Every structure is written in C-alpha cells, then in structure tokens.
Image (cartoon, rainbow, N blue to C red):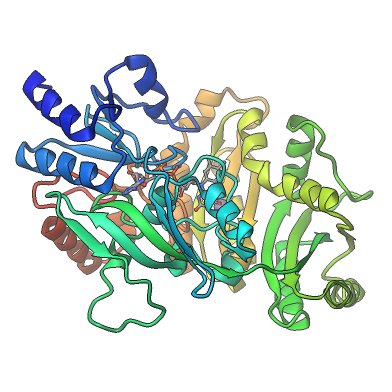
Length: 468
Ligand code: FAD
Ligand code: ZN
C-alpha cells in the first residue's frame, strides 16, 4: 500500500484507530477453525460512525478494498482479508446508545458484544433473545451482517426478525440513517433488510435498534432420550401443542455428541443412566413455575407412553440447567478437539429431516466408510449441522481431501428436499462458488444487480457471497 494512502486512512481512523503491527493484526487474520488465513497491511479501528464514513470515502475514491470485521467468529471466511485488503474492525464501537423500556427497544453500536446486549436487556428486566455459542465474542454488527440464528429462533426468529432500525455506512462513505425504531412502517422498500445477512458486501453496519421482549419469569429445561430423528420431529409437534406455544428451544443431539462432549469438556457427563441413539434438549419459557413444570412434565409423560421418548430429565435448578445446555453448546468445541471434521449448515422442511438424515448419511458413508456422523442442531427450525468427524483410522488430510466431493453430494440432496445450503452461517467464501448451482439464474442476476448498485467499485468485502 502506498504510504500516502495509508497515512490518509490512519488520519481518518483517529489517533487510536489503526495498527500496522503484525502481532496485533495476526489474530484478526485467522478464523476460529483455522480453516482460513488471510493477510492485511493495515487494521483500522474507528470509534465513531463519522470515522467509518471518512474511511470508506477514501477507500471508494482510491479503489481500495475493505473487509469489515466484528468478533471474527464467522464460520465461512467472510471476515478474512484474503488478498491484502484493509481490515475494518468495528470492535471499538461499543456504546449502548439508548434503552427504551416502554418501547422495549435497545439501540447499540455495531461492535457491542452479543452477551453485553443480553446483559443490558436483563438489567432492565427485559430479554434480548438472540443466543449462540459464540455470544461472548460475536458482535451485533456481525450478527446482523450474517443474519445469525442460534438456539432461540424457534420462538423469536433470526437476527433479521429482531431488528427495527439500522445505521449503515455505504461504500462511498454516505451514512444511511434507517434508525426509525418503528414496529410498523410500510413506507416503501424495507432497505434495512437488504443489509441484514449481506455479510459486509453492501454496506458497513455501524449501529442498530433491536427488539427486546418481556423476560420470561421461569424456564423449564429438559434433556430427553428419543429413539430416532423421526420421534424427535413427532415430539416437537407434541410439545408445541401441549405447552401452548411456550417452547423456546428444541435441539437434536446424537449419542456420539454426548460421548464427544463427555470426553473433551471437563465436568460434562451424560445425565441419563441408559444410552440412547438420539436426544432432544428442549426449553419452555413462561410466567408461572408450577404451571410450566406441570405442563412440560405431563407432556413428556404422554410422549413416553406413546414411545416417541424413552427417558427424560428436567433441570431442577440453574446449575443443572447450565449443565444440560453445556452438553449442546460444547458440541462444536468437542468436535474440534476430536480432530478433523467436514461440516454442513443446512436446512430442510422440518418434516423432511428424518429422510434427509437417512439419505445424506448413507451417501457420505458410501464415499468415506467409517466417517463418524455428528449431526446436531436446531431441529425446531429445520436446521441441522450435518457434520462428520474423520474415521478413527484415517489421517485428517486423507479425510479432508473429500471435502468438496462430500459437500456437493450433501448439498445436492438438500436441494432435492427443497432446502438451503446455508441455514445460519452464510456464504462467505466457503460456499460462494456453490451458490449458483442452487439458486436460479434470476436470483443470481438480481443479487449482482444489487451489489453493483450499492458498491459500484466493488470495494466492500470483494469476492465474498457472489463473484461479479
Ligand atoms: P465476524 O465473524 O467478524 O464477521 C462475519 C461477517 O459479517 C463477515 O462477512 C464480515 O465481513 C461481516 N461483518 C461483521 N461486522 C460487520 C459490520 N459491522 N458491518 C458489515 N459487515 C460486517 N452462527 C449462528 O448463526 N448460529 C449459531 O448458533 C452459531 N454458533 C456458533 C458457534 C461457534 C462456537 C462459533 C465460533 C460460531 C458460531 N456461529 C453461529 C457463527 C458466528 O458466531 C456468527 O456468524 C456471528 O454472527 C458472527 O459475528 P462476528 O461479530 O464474529 O462477525
Ligand atoms: Zn447453529
């Protein structure tokens, strides 16, 4: 990078707003799974919307590419600068701007960590329901840019459903203020939703106004043994009907998932005495403990009578609840410790999950006999993390050599079931070249048209999501 350009950008980012120190930049260049590694000469860390705006105006003028980054927990390589782009970290934009109890809204800057939004809501006795295992590092800007999901989508929706207003800096530096925090607004196109899920390719999100909810006074969490995914799907309808819509989470976990978590995560253990091929971790939230307990217990009892569940444990205090959730939340970490894995983040219609699992698992095992299926996830949303750990007797590299072949097979089956090749993690670089195979030519054309309209010089996260 030319020294004059670097000097202009550093000036725009403010006194503490940049680094050229390789040691400081290094952690921003590698993602969580160490699957992608990038390079960048300059890390910019603006603290205000005004500074972001000044930086992008310079980048646009000089055709300088920028990669926005929040907590660097993305799983598809979207936040990594592969070609020496400038890294634009929003991590210093950490202010909670306002919390309106009566309107049940919170306005935060893009760099606020998800867990801090949850805590701010809690301190006003309200709930911000977006929750995922990376919530201690992921930022709201990243959550919105990836339209993150997580474990409460069943009841509260994805990040997209939780946003009322947005502040975005466009590629040329203009600030688009869409912060009207209205529950109802039918005045033309809903522009803010364009930026949600656009993975930093259409604009840089600098702030958002988010929906808050009444904090459920009580929760009941149960870990339930089920004979098969088919029974899990039946249990979902049963519990939804029996609890009157109070289910907030419904997660599928296979036996091997519990074994991996017990093996790799200190303190984790199987809470049920007899092994089961599959489990469901479910949670219901309401206002009255006795009522909610009774309704969950009764519906689990009838589920057991009809055979869709074989055993269950209900957490009787917060420590037990956390221990049950730890079994689910540590699955990715445990699978990582177990060694190489090939992963898919897919969705299909809920009723198709059992057939999808059966067909796709058989298809993968035909290619790599001995691969260990570790399929888990948000079955209540039709979203499965369809993962495989390497066979015990295969080298990681020999297994990973099948990555593209296996992804193609799995994604083709997903497509046949009318599903999506990315349910919550996005496209980034990882799935960019697969997208045209599964989207219509017209969808791809409209996506390119939008990208060209909003970022004519292709400076915002170039090469991510779509190839121009
Ligand atoms: P980053 O990783 O920094 O960036 C992600 C993308 O957003 C990149 O394309 C980046 O360019 C863009 N971006 C970031 N900030 C901005 C901004 N302010 N403006 C414009 N573009 C921006 N995801 C789920 O949906 N559900 C889960 O359950 C889930 N579980 C996870 C569990 C683990 C252990 C890990 C490591 C990740 C998980 N993820 C999950 C993925 C990840 O946490 C989410 O994608 C998260 O929303 C990313 O936030 P981030 O701040 O880390 O963004
Ligand atoms: Zn997930």
